[in-house]
Image: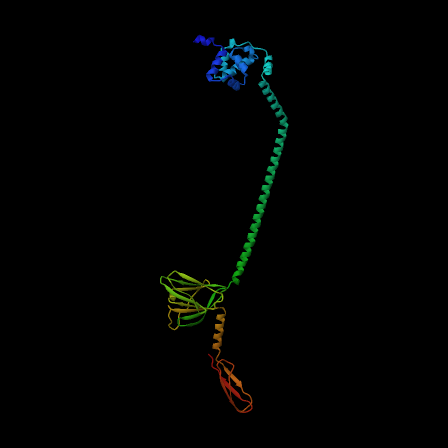
Length: 351
């Protein structure tokens, strides 16, 4: 067996390796790019059909590597059986005989020519691109600086506006207390458990809040201008608010447990005066007078208090008795006199 292996030619060994791999000559031509006729010549040991030793060794090594053999070792093993080195003129011959090689070389040369032609264009393009990038960076930096300056200016402007607004609002707030009316209660009359207050300083709708304090319940009823608007019993800690129209003149509040009832008008708490003449401190009637109703009540009170007056009437010429009526409320006088001029005094009783 050893002698048979030694007697194998290089072409036979390559052929057996190709068959063992399952390759056809067409497959091997596709893999190695070596023309099929050269592959057949190698397997037949017809090295004279090849262009020369340079290509013989190159083709043999490439063939061996493609079928799984070590091409270098195979060349060393069959060194003595390979033909002698030929002149380089075979290179030109193989190029002329191998169209694929000529085409590949031509493509390489054309690619190199294109690259040489494109080098100036590429260089100029790179320079232009660098200049454009530099301009863009400078413009972006300038834009950022401008935007930053505008933002800072806006902040200063907004800050200044806020400061001005704050000063203006502060000035308005400082002036507003002078214009704001303070709700005040003035006691007008009091009799037993009944008490009347004049309310001033209200404007528009006024909230009337009834609250129950402590732990006990408190019954309360509210009437506005003689009309009942609410009544209920509140437990300790609860409250009820009534919105009084701006046209309200009089509000009457009846409380069943005044000591546990808190009355607030427009946010101002009403502090009840103590009852008079032994009146009840628990069951009380509170009357609140607003606006014109309060002033008219004051006018009526002053008219009543000043109604007791003494009037003097002068009669005209004549003889007899005359009965006259004075100009004041509820006044009747009797006049008697004789002669050219008579004087009469009448007494006036007012209520």
